[in-house]
Image 1 (cartoon, rainbow, N blue to C red):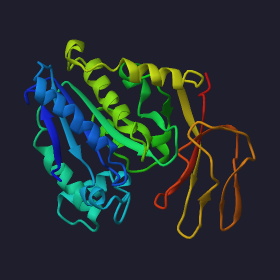
Image 2 (spheres, rainbow, N blue to C red; image 1 turned 180 degrees about the vertical axis):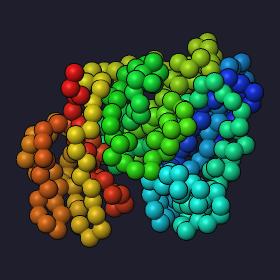
Image 3 (cartoon, rainbow, N blue to C red; image 1 turned 45 degrees about the vertical axis):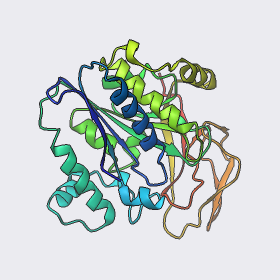
Image 4 (tube, rainbow, N blue to C red; image 1 turned 30 degrees about the vertical axis):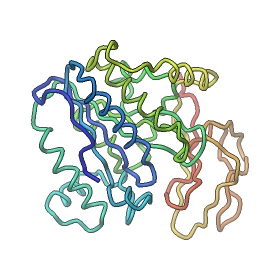
Length: 300
């Protein structure tokens, strides 16, 4: 697997759109989505206003279909780790991947783009998982409000070392798109729709050169019509080594939860919801430190 999935558009541009897929090795749908988008661009060669680049994230994990090999690749994007990786003192496969990603990024990040967008592509282990994790929503709302899916605010504040936080600090409009269930074949077209939406709404590409996305857009608008568009994080249940955490079966993203509801079990006994809200990202896989999230509409 090559690091670069595709590049399109003149390097000397005002707009940079950078997408990263396969941050977790058991989430290949984002890679497939980028491959489809670049294949379309390469076939039809439309005129564009900007530079669009897509990279694979954790290649060894993608090759073995594991979330990660030693540590979560989406928890190590800190200034300290990046400095260590750049200096060649990698202590894990993921730190080596961080060094490799930055080596590719250095080749295109030197140009003074006036507008920069970072999109991180993911899927979830729980069903019904199409949503956006927004960073600095007031800064990015002109773009993110074009997506008819729930926007989750405040989640990145609880998760240290995420790529979206790092890129926001570098001046990017930065967000993650969750495309659905890992194994669902529809996750790839949903993520491809998200990429095309960014290309369109940023002014990179004219709509006359776009594939028809109306069916996916209508499907998502109908699917989430009864949910608030904005939801903020209320609670994160962290899983620690030795917890023996097991989510109770049958939950999916955006299930409505009442306070005290039995959501999971661990070595201490039942894990109960500390408050009412909507369930997000229930942990239905062996790897991961985040058991589940609870979100609710932000106070006005």
